[in-house]
Length: 243
Ligand code: PGA
Image (cartoon, rainbow, N blue to C red; front, side):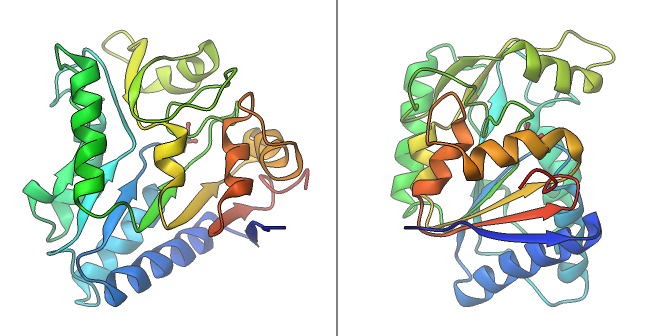
């Protein structure tokens, strides 16, 4: 049986240090690595740790390519709440990555199916994701793959659930929280060679328990990770409290 590698830390900073070290090891062993990146609160300290490594001349992103997991529909690319903006403010503006090497779904594409096909084809063309960073939703979603009757395959347009809207609407102080997003599918995500999932806080404890100890079911999207051969889950004690 495949076992998910679980590491529990005392502080968020320790989680970030471990994740950043794993990412740095990946980039040093393959400078043109393809990284799958996540937005949300969970990876922010990891991105800060990577920026620090770059500033200390320990790490360069000049040949790295990135693909983000998802993007909201129907908000301008440069909106303060777009994931494009989040990633630039949180990471890309502070490191030597080339703008042409960072990739997002176009949440404003007129033909969303064509846009999703373009995105997935580009991931393949770049050789697939070497290392994927993931958060997990309170409802065990990964990217914007919400609990469902079947596991999604490639990228697609999804309607966000009330639970996700509730969790993310705090960021939308001046505009309406979008109801739709383009997201990589569960099958896309699982094609990554290695995966690191980060979770902190008590609110994530049930999702983490269901993901690791429950059956593999699309009603717990993250449970699919039990079938992947190289997943590391980095947790604080609160997120690990039900294991
Ligand atoms: P968070 O979100 O990192 O902001 O907790 C994770 C997610 O919803 O996937």
